[in-house]
Length: 482
Length: 84
Ligand SMILES: Cc1cc2nc3c(=O)[nH]c(=O)nc-3n(C[C@H](O)[C@H](O)[C@H](O)COP(=O)(O)O)c2cc1C
Image (cartoon, rainbow over all chains, first blue to last red; front, side, top):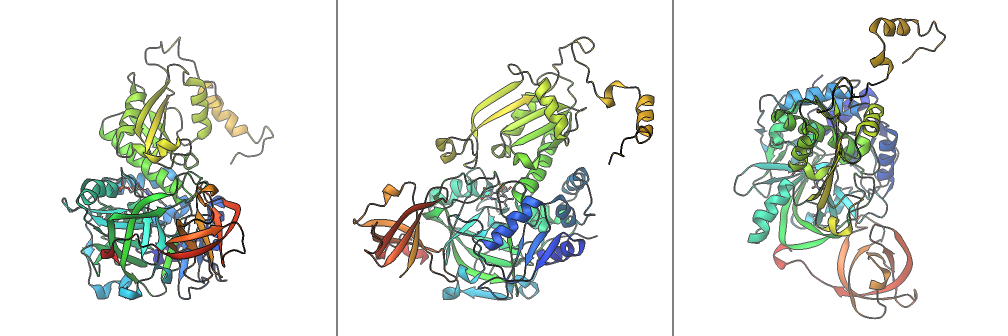
C-alpha cells in the first residue's frame, strides 16, 4: 500500500478501512464541527469527514487526521493494524534513509491554484474557518497545517505547525515559540531589522507532510516528507512571494509576518488538555493572497485532553527523535517512549545500566537538546522493563526510584508558555524546570546481595514450569487470556 | 443593534462612561462573526443606555456574568499604513 500523496487520498483510504466516517448532514462551523472532532478524539473514533458546512457550500472539513495509531499507519502506507513499535521502526528506517528532495511542478499541474483570491477579494472569512472550542480567542485557521518560511541568510526552508488565529479578514495572529525554527529566525533576523518575513500557510496537506511539519527532526521538512513517503513531494511557486508550497494542498495563504505590529492571540484549547497560555500579543501574519482547490477540505486538529494529534503524533515523533539523538551519542538505550496520556511531558527511556550516572546523562542530553522545552520529566528504567507497559514502568518508578538519591531537579531551563503547572511568570517568559527519575539499581550495589530480585511469574519460575502452567491454564478452569 | 464581545482579565477594566480603547469582536451572525476591531468606546452596565450589547469573556475564555451596553465611538487603526 503506497502512502497517500494528498489529504484527499488519505481521506479515501481512511473511509475504506473504516477509520473515517462521512458526515452528510450540515454541520455548523461555530462549535459543532469542533465538538464532533473533540468527541472523536476522546473516543478514539473514526475521523469525521464533514461534507456540508453551514454558510460554506462547496467546502468540507476533515478532523482528527492522525489521532489514532491506525490512521498513523495508513498515512505511512502500512497495515492499519500495525503495532506502535512497528510504526516506530518504520519511521526510524525511513528517516535514516536516503534524502528525497522535492520536485517543482508547473502552476497548471498544481491543484492548489484552482481558485485564486487577490487584492480586495482576500477575505479569510470566505474560508470555513472553525470556532474549534467555545470560548477560544478566535476562529483558528491553522490547527493542522504548515507555515512555510525560508531562512533569510542560510536559505533553508522551514515548515512548522504553529497555530494561527483569524483576527480579521486579512490578519492572523499565531503562537510561534521563541525556541522554534521560525521563532529564532524572527528574533535573530527579521524583528531587529524591522523587515517583514514572507510566509505561506498550507492547509489540508498530505498526512506525511503534516507529520513532517510537526516532527522535531533536523532534516528540512520537504525532504523529510519525501523520505517518509518514499517519493518526492510536489511543490509549486507561490503567487506573491518566492516560497514554494505543496502543490496538492487544499488551501494556501500567502503573506508577510509583520515585524512592527502585533495583535492579540488566544486563549486556545491546548495539547496539555487545558487553556493555559494567556491571551497575548503574538506574531502577526498579514495575508495578501489565498489560493485553494475546488471543493477544498479544511483540516482540523482539536487539541484538548488525550488523545489528539498534539499528544499522539508528537509523543511518537519526539520519542523517536530523542531515541536517535541518544543512540547517536552512544548511550546504551534500548528504547524511548512517550505515552500520549503524558501529553508528551514524560520521556520513558529503557537503558542497559552498564555505568553509573547514565540516567542523569540521558536527562541532561534530552533536556539540553532542541527538543528539551517540550517535556519536563525523564524516567529511566532498565532494559528488563517494558517501556510500553505503564504498569511495569509505574512499578519500577514506585519501587526503585530513591526519593533522596534518584530524583534530580534542574531549574531555569527552557520551557513553554503551555505548561499548566508553571507560574504566570514562567509562562510569560517560557521558563521551565525539569526532573529526572532514576529508576535503575545503582551500579555500585552488589548484584547478588544488594539488588532485590523481581518476583513475578516471568522472572522467578523455571521456563519448564512457566510453559506447563501456560499450557494448562484453561485446563485449570481459567478462561483463555487474550 | 450589534452584538460585541471583549476579552478582559478583570471586569473592572471596563470602567463605565469613560472613553476606553478596546479590542472587540462581532457576534453578529454571518461569515464575519468573531472578527476583531480595535475601537474607542463607552460602556455601561445599564443595558438600555447604548444601542449595542457587549458580552465579556475572561482570561481563559470563561463567559462572565457581567453584561454591558456599548457605544462604539470610532475605529482605531493600529496597523501601520504600509500593510493596509
Ligand atoms: C496540532 C499541533 C499544533 C501545534 N501548535 C504549535 C504552536 O502553536 N506553536 C509552536 O511553536 N509549536 C506548535 N506545535 C509544535 C510544532 O509543530 C513542532 O515543534 C514543530 O517541530 C515545529 O518546530 P520547529 O520550528 O522547532 O521545527 C504544534 C504541533 C501540533 C501537532
